[in-house]
Image 1 (cartoon, rainbow, N blue to C red):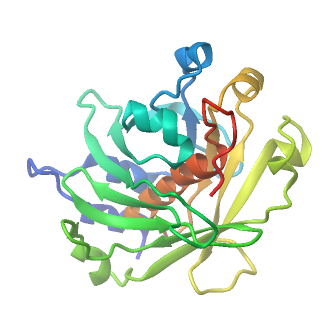
Image 2: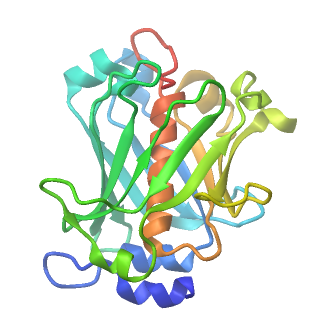
Length: 273
């Protein structure tokens, strides 16, 4: 079943109309996510709520095509941001950029005090109407960085989305994996292998000979990289990914940003989990 065909089965908002953001996701093979520069965070040292812009992108190059297609805004408590840093809980609200500025997706991450294999991080993807679209889990690994992208599960207080199981898309979807020895983890510069860190996307339980997509943290400019924690990601979606699965891969990029690259304003340490 093609991605375009799946675009007709998008979640429905509370008002009864289609959530247009999923139609947009169905039509793009790749996206570029850029975190906004927060001047007050640099001047004050206080951790601010993150904001991002999402652009359509080219599959071959991490480029921004045109104007943003989505905007994302973090909602979290001020005290928790300062005290818990990258481990904090938050909601990420994602809006279209058309005149209506419609919120079509919410990412919910609970607070996790992670210690080795205990209390690992997770993020849930929901439509604006509260339908559960999937979840991303960060399992424990001694060296490599791995994310598991899963279909939604029934949880208390959550309305699961039955169309996914009906389309044969239940269970685990993808494994997102990065080798820990990549130069970009240790040296940030705009040349050679240091300019990006790559997570390959593999079908869950399938062969890892050939990735079906990728998430890459890419160089975001000298000033942003040197003086802020404003990051940029390039996501190439698997060719047969549904809008739901693309939405969860976007969620995975946000979780990676918080786990590995979100600095605590108080001690400037990375929040690797």
